[in-house]
Image 1 (cartoon, rainbow, N blue to C red):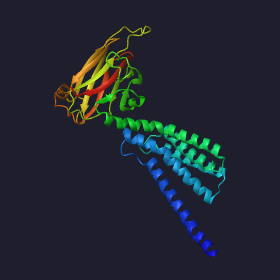
Image 2 (image 1 turned 135 degrees about the vertical axis):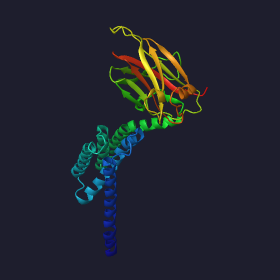
Image 3 (image 1 turned 180 degrees about the horizontal axis):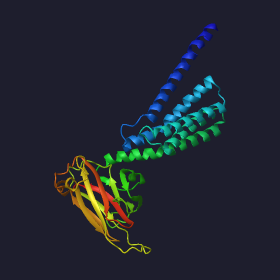
Image 4 (image 1 turned 90 degrees about the horizontal axis):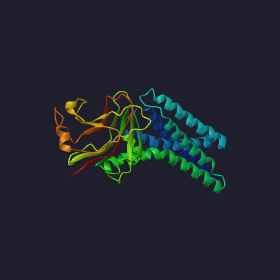
Length: 332
């Protein structure tokens, strides 16, 4: 009996110490992840960080509750205070981020709180009847999956860019709009007006351009290697004039610009072409890749390092609508 008691005296502190070490390690990882400036602000890094928030705080809260159970009390109230403490600490970290070169995010705080709350519900539901426990735990998991679905869809879209190199933008999902830099415009996905060209892609981008600093929609996340392709194709339209529109119909002048990594915004280092669209115009545009490469006056574009493709409105003095669909590279 004494040997058994002695064995328990030796093993229990070791288990406690191990739990404390793991909790400290996870806490340090959380502090580093929240407060250390990111190496870059690319979409992939930002969305990966968003995806990690919830499981990290679920684990951190679980460990904190385990420690509070051992060293303070195993009551539900103590566990609630522990959980609220974790959520409060995450809120403080989000506020501090703005002073450290990062941006405070409501989504991150919601993800942190959801992860912490899920760990709390799992902890307090252990002694409950199995049916009630299942309902609570399934609800917690469903909430976690819902919060994580946004970053997951973004990461899937980033992977899709590399998987479907010739399809630059199909707009079949709203998350594709994250590939674009938007200036002086409001964008959304709509039912495609380009059904006369193709029924394979039933969605398109609708951009409301407002007078300002050169309204622009710029595709920044795309297949950067255009070697081996024959042409760039896209569908472009201007909706028919609305009967409530008192502005006389004037051409909408849109400039298409394509640049590589080494280029600046000067015309001599950028492919530039201009289109004038009247209300109701709907076109399919095909541009040979050789023309894109050789048009800049200063030097040919490097087709292995295309940086962006953008549509810019020129001399816009009143709001106008632009629709884009199925931007792609073709091999013939």
